[in-house]
Image (cartoon, rainbow, N blue to C red; front, side):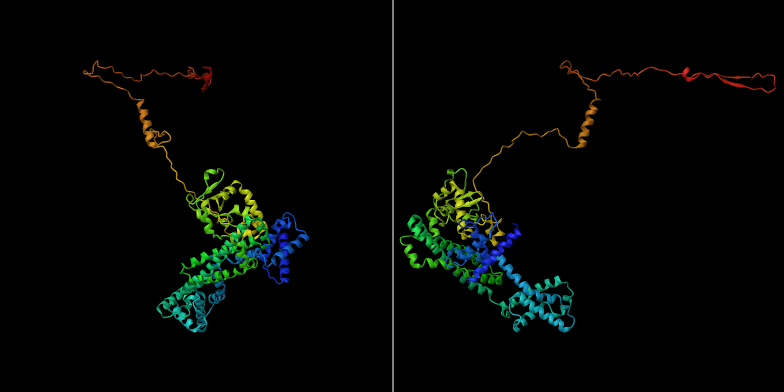
Length: 582
């Protein structure tokens, strides 16, 4: 099926499910419906094959299963999924919260800014109207008071006139649109600064809230509320965990508890605990930021509203496990906190020498140990796989297992050893459990294994969250002074003129004669020798001997003696032989 056609079919299925739920009085957002469709198709017990096209009966079956699960208001699993969808759609980073807030402000001011920048005022009345609009813009952008309050408008007008008198409007109107917008922002900041200074001096500041005091009161109250909620869900999670541990050792009790969906209730409170822990550090950071009080006020209201809306998603498991039932189930059981469980095995460390094919990381040997991204939200993978989905916190002090560039923690050393023998087996078991309980995909952060379930808020951070461990160890190195014998050529000369000088010197030596001198004092004391190059007789010879001779000219003149006539006629005769005949 082409992608466009498949997308159309999915949209029709989602629309039909939404209409069915609405007919039963339940308004379900499309995001939740889409999540539930994928969860139902993924569950192998439902018998859907993702490799083939859905038939009409398959679609009807899918719609029916999704509607039944979405209308099951007493199912903790559905509450967990609703909580996950709500949090994913409403929670973003602090920067994105404030960016959206600023975008809304800009959109509200766009019409006022356009009226000012597009104005072509000429007469006095139009210029006065333009100046009043600039005052309104300054008040709206700063957020310090209402532009309909006469006292606030007068104070803002006086502050604006001190830096931008009305006579400067002519120059302002000659500027380009971008320059006008930039100057409006600068005037807003200057007027705001003047009003804040006057407020501090007790000479003004009408309509300006005491933001530090508001935050100082709001932050502790909101933090206390989050802390109380967090403490409540943690206590509930500890109690559920203790009961499930007891049931794991008693098969009969485990069968009795099956209808109560105790594991789903544990997943529900653990997910709420994680979300509250995500929100809590933001409130702690708020108390240290005193430079952007308005932004923090907006942010704290959004986070407080987000925290309040998480409470309705915790109601289902209270129906199955009221306090009386919990007291009976907890009879003879010691409820342990996560901290107590970690302290019980804090000295039990993995012996690295017992493993040759896997790598273990420890706090003392890894620089960024606390920043590693632990799989399954830090819960013990072995315990979850072998005890039918029990969530126990892992203890990083025992050792973090690095397997295929992923990191795993365990609650005991025995669990770590067992998991390390065959990691793939336990990873597959956890994946199959997640297919049956769709809320586990987000609770345990299994989005990479189920790509269609990646949260929108995490799509931008998939590549950023991977952190490699920086291991630490003591090492020493030593090098020889000279690993190889020196290869320096002392006779090498790079200067061309120096080479020419040496060449001329050698050429001159060929024409030199060695002399030796012996004095009377050194006579017969030693033998002296000298050597010269003896002169040679040199001759040349051509290829053949030859000679040449010019022919002797022989020219005669006849008729000089005359004849019978008085006129003499001479005849010249050349008897000289040719050159080649000589």
